[in-house]
Image (tube, one colour):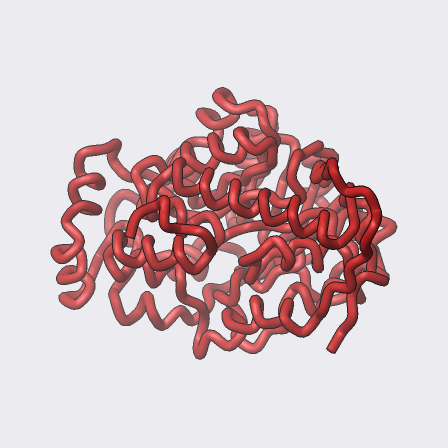
Length: 381
């Protein structure tokens, strides 16, 4: 299977599975517990039908929008995700470059593998920083200040990882950072030698955002251990309100799911929220972001930008979210599988295919701009 044979999400996933050792593939693909929420994230879009209009003159379609004060050419952005250079040696460099080509926003994670400074200096498209709240308050301030110093305009605080989810696929393979695999996991690396060749012949793996402040180069530290031991489970609304004031700019909470929390976020000055269950990787059985979108937009949509992520695989999924009031939609696995499959070229092909779908679907809906999409175009089964 070649990149030219990839035409949709599932094709890219198949190619990534062929090229990645199974511990890495399963880290991307897996969810928590029985993975009910992981599957439901995509299934939720199937319970809503689109009602198109015709004869509207749709020769020219404008997909641009503004979210969190950032003008973007597509109503989707590449969500911040961790460990990208494990999946392909280009990592976040490929993600940032592809996002710039399509004129949209990308995110850098606290557990990212390329320094935010490098990406901010090289790319002019909007960049957000996904931030985790650490027990060390000084570390929190230092990380935010570093983002501000590099011209990053959007701070995205992740609030649904107060402890790590039960990701049993990782337990089975022994996946951790740095890599510490069991025999089953090591065997699969042997069977995928090309990944190993790329890994050892390119820049040494690192976590630059963390390594400036924390010594994580010694004993292996699993992602779960990092989430459980270094992040602050006592974080509360007062802590976040102080951070919002300290940042004094576009501040977004990622992982909000209830109307009460969305309202509280607006009350303390947040300018945006991302409805998210962390791709089904945290609380299994959690409601999907799409299913929660309507009531949260009705509650706070006039006070802040509401975004969603989770389960997006098609242009029609994006249109349904926008019609319900989402300002933009975050992509995660949607670009991680193409990254693993072919680096920057893979992401560009995937996002290009999605853009083509969006243009075609907008025309079939009888719309020429994002603001023409509305709830009247949807029917709930």
